[in-house]
Length: 220
Image 1 (cartoon, helix red, strand yellow):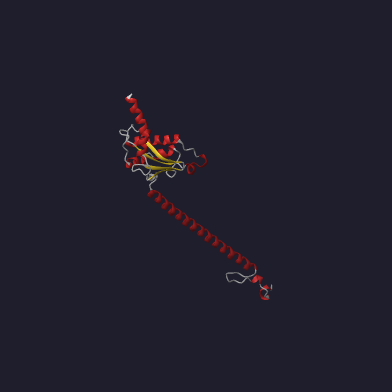
Image 2: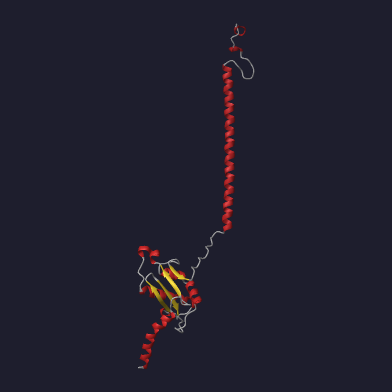
């Protein structure tokens, strides 16, 4: 009989104790703000008690992963001050002593370590699932497969080769134009000589008497 009385007292006192541990602006608590409409639009799902339980489970997972302990459960994640616009506060209790809260710094480390997994669980991102006071973890810089200096070297070499090719093509075109011009000048000079002969004038300075009108030269 005494055991049943103690059990009932524990069941009645547990919610009151949890309420005392989890409060707005609790020293070791964090506020969570979720924007389902912003993230998913028309595909946004309803945030209900099942989703709250899922959040407790993901946080228990994050705490287990951080401390490498199998003793964290959903009962260690206490939620409070829930609003219809999907915001709430939560604290984490110690598995060894449910009246003792895990320090805020340790909770932050656990969240940071599993932030990507938590976001994926709810189809959200750092901007739509906010742990107020825990800034988003910056993504690790992507190291390219090709070193930057090699990329710059390739660009410079490519520009130099393009300049050399352009210079060679330009020189070749100028040479062809010059040869074509000399050929045209020679053809013009030959044509002038032919016309001069036909008109009785030799372009080398010799007068062709066969085309003169002077009787002295045409008289037989």
